[in-house]
Length: 412
Image (cartoon, rainbow, N blue to C red; front, side):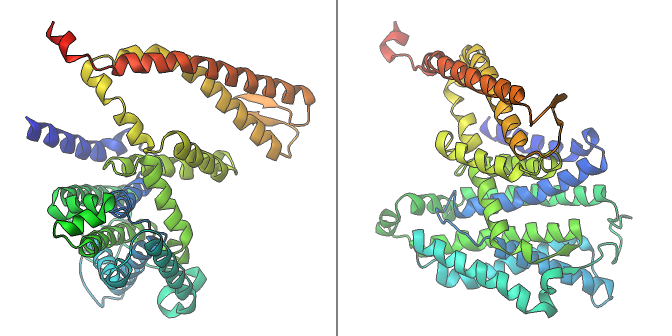
């Protein structure tokens, strides 16, 4: 029965990937879906480092970027007819380069863990990013390099000129990569990575080399990060120094942490959330990075296990069948909390707005009117007070829904 459940989850995952364009068929939606597939592989590869292996890396973009650069160079070789193969294998080239880079860098960086490893990864990331501006013949300098994905042999009649064709290619790659990354967690190396993360001394005591375990996880992570870089190259047909620098490394860290480190589905959730914020929220507000920072701060303070951890907190109530007891308390707390967040966003946007009239949620607000500010502040204070007052009721409902009955009571 357990195998059937697992197969149903994977089949559902594959179906969701394949039917997603049927519900979102606009050009913008397909572009966002392409970005999500890239982000999912990239975030899952980072989770292999930090979530499973406990290795905090500030230079994970190195393997993503190097994979992308080699993928674009492969596109150029195909365009010049120097080599002849389908572009469907381009992500594999990115993965191989990511793996080779991880083997070399991991050979010395995984000797240490904790802060030392983090600083080494930061130094390597800055070194490679700065080198990309120096060796312009290969990296293209600040302008980067570009290729054309429409050359080469057709793949069952597809030349991949359309974004929808690239999406289905990416969907196949993300499904395969997700399966292999999950299978890695079930191997002895993957399980020992968790043990080394928790207690490397005990892992050494029972006969496992903590360095070798970290090295294996590091190389596997570089492989899949390179695959993500190859998909990025296919999707955008160009790549720049930005894909190698600390900004990209920080972005994947946010994806993994907000989604939920340690949970396999966590980075997938984080990748979807940050992609939507980057693609949609940025179209409505120039302050979207501020909101991202606020969300990250709130996640660290109140959801240290991320959104996946928050979902898993309801497992006991789900098994007991008492999840419905939380519906009303969640609404009582959620409505004023949503109103508080909406009013806070209005205040932030009005503070940065230089226009006479600010359009927000169908309303016309005057940032220069004292009356508008007074109303917004009143809503913030009142909704915050209502949210605080409702937390006690929510806490009581939570304890009741997750209360495990005493064994003697259940027997009687």
